[in-house]
Image 1 (cartoon, rainbow, N blue to C red):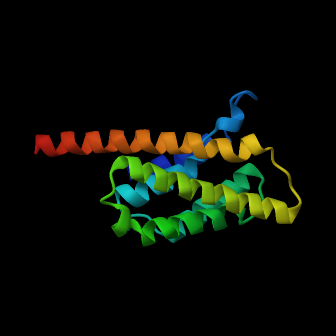
Image 2: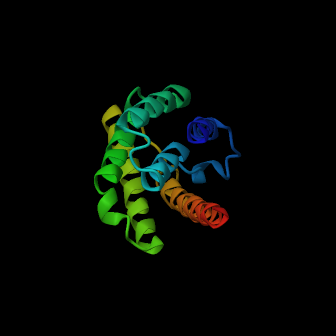
Length: 154
């Protein structure tokens, strides 16, 4: 239940207005949260969750309907598909995998925007990859710490 509330909170964080100087660095909260849950609790959320959250994000942000949904579907599918192969990687290599998945997410959005004739400044397109990777790493480290403390109590 808390994961579902967290995913809904990420939708809110994705549309909260930010100052112009900070706005280009806003992480893609929904993509980061879905990737976190794909690696922290695989099979808990499915492609349907990614699709529904993508449609909600499209509706809230005013993007083309299905744009974020398609990009989220691709990265969540890849994360679920290759989870067993990358789960044993050290955190430094997982960070690279997450950065590549977030870059793929942004590239899909970039491609769809290009087909639609919409231009987005490069800083707004690629800065979220870096900030999203940092947020994912912090979430993962905090989640691991919390799990270790919970195991120590049992």
